[in-house]
Length: 384
View (tube, helix red, strand yellow):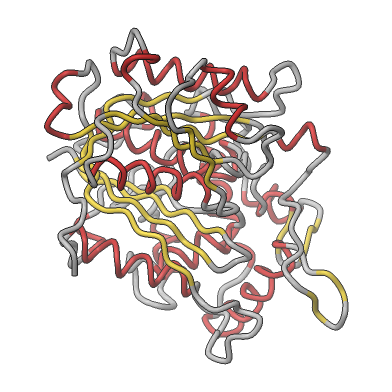
């Protein structure tokens, strides 16, 4: 295999807009909020001179790259739009990392943004095929996985409810999250049904928002104000369409498994449960988070239930997951989500995550699925 990108690139600035139903903000407003927070974090006072290129990710942009270039007045340089559905943010980050590692640029800006609320979108507007001639939404598709997992491993809606309770709690500790409401297991179990076994609290909150990162060569990181966070690995993997894959068993997500294998190889990780201190995973549904525990090797296949019961993945547990509330409560502006995960991990590794800070965290992972649904992007960051 090629040498890879390990430790060649550093995150030197990170920013994020408020996530939510931002009726009083345009996409440009959110982009400016996120980017200028990242500029300030990095100590960049003249972005028109200091930013060599821009990689932006958005699924619902109204004007594509112009939306970013014009809002930030970043002309006379390459601005690239990346789209990979829910994995868009991680893929934009990957492109920026590779451009620096390849020697093309010294410093780049990554921006993930989307404003689906202005489009009247209450959830991801994608049809993932049909079943008996009827359209299937993401909730319907993942509910099929839930039914098979429940039957195979004696798991029920109570385990999913506990994941929702955890993420709602974490979201109350994140100032820029969309939902700041504690819930109980009973709240989750009694909520209106969306697609059995998913009730309202099992489903991520679609929102508006933007997040931004400043990347630079690690050898130049000392020139910036922000503490550098090193990029250890980043991978994007695809798998066959689950609807036509004869080997798909509904008990795990192949793109997650493939991307995990690649990123662990790059980062030199043998035992992810011991190597990773904090993780942000793609909890578009509570069941998706549960499957990801196992797909990423944080526990054995079928063992998620006991770890949910013991609190392994809670803030005070052995491996805290979705420390800012995840998609579930921080919100899910599709193109911004992957960048928001990296923003949270940057805060965690620097010790700047406030009440939700994981003490002594030095290695962080973000997991971002997408496609329809055939893609997964994973990134590993570290402080040394």
